[in-house]
Image 1 (cartoon, helix red, strand yellow):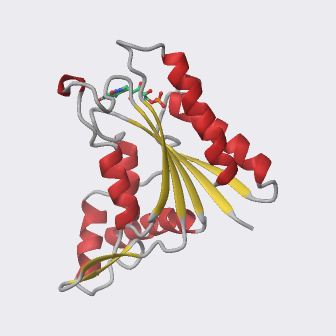
Image 2 (cartoon, protein in one colour; image 1 turned 30 degrees about the vertical axis):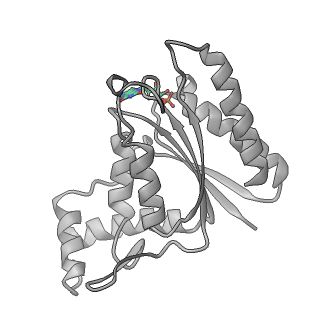
Length: 208
Ligand SMILES: Cc1cc2nc3c(=O)[nH]c(=O)nc-3n(C[C@H](O)[C@H](O)[C@H](O)COP(=O)(O)O)c2cc1C
């Protein structure tokens, strides 16, 4: 049985465009795959551990070939629990708003917590990185309200999808699809592009 995890990075609840599009995707997915497990990880639910002095220290201890101890051991175990939960799924739906041209900091925190040597990536001094998340696939809902492709540079730049798509493929998730809702408030009715984004989410959800 396939297991799908929806990881959401918007704290805006019923006002969130990315959560609404993700819900459309998941409704279609559940209808097409009634036996599958579908779970939700809200990155704002308060359970994501910090990755500060003890976590960064543990990472460098592990890179040096030793075992983290004390506070480092606890930080490493907390990070491992988040990774194990994540790794127990085969498919991921990420809903990702644009915040200040990038991703909300909780999503970056999630990435910093789980992206560890031997879990998400391997490293060789001559060959560089290898992504270890093999055999998985992802769909990503991207939203923004000012930036959009083809708009003047004064409407901002995209370090959201570029950063996150790069992380997915760096981690080994090379099969991914994106649904974008970036209404052009100056020239178009947001309802038309909202409908298009939901229609795409329905199709992608069925096929995923
Ligand atoms: C903290 C914050 C920062 C934002 N920064 C940008 C931005 O840099 N560029 C942009 O186009 N929209 C920006 N927005 C608008 C959001 O991307 C837009 O409202 C989007 O719909 C948010 O996704 P959500 O509706 O799922 O929360 C920002 C919104 C917030 C709350």
